[in-house]
Amino acid sequence: MGRSDAVELMDHISRAFEWVGVGVIVGAFLLTAAFAARDVSQHRETAEIYERVRRVFGRGLLLGLEVLVAADLIRTVAVDPTLNNVEVLGILVLIRTLLSFSLDVEIDGALPWRKRPQRGPPPAS
Image (cartoon, rainbow, N blue to C red):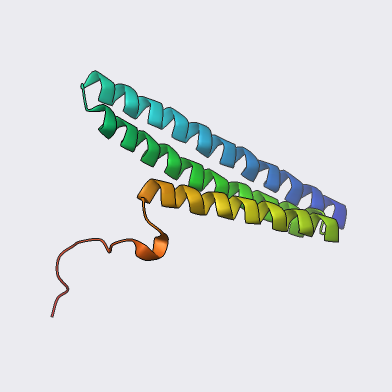
């Protein structure tokens, strides 16, 4: 396999990651719509439905963004590693990281370092 074949393969892989990222976001939307429809049909409280929609779709968006960042990394490192592309990658990763951070705070209602630990059984002595 020559260099151009390897670059072409990496380009196809990065495009596959992009499609997976989009698929995750679309899947999260469809799952959220299904949950919302079920909750409405069961006459649940509007606030409860709203919180569930935000939580489920928000987590799907976060996962989709992570996959899209992976696609950008593959494309920049393996396909076209020019200084300009690395700069663009840095900007994209920064924007997506800030977006992921703000979504995470919005979903959980607290900064990551202020989240309460999960309650569970006490540790064994």
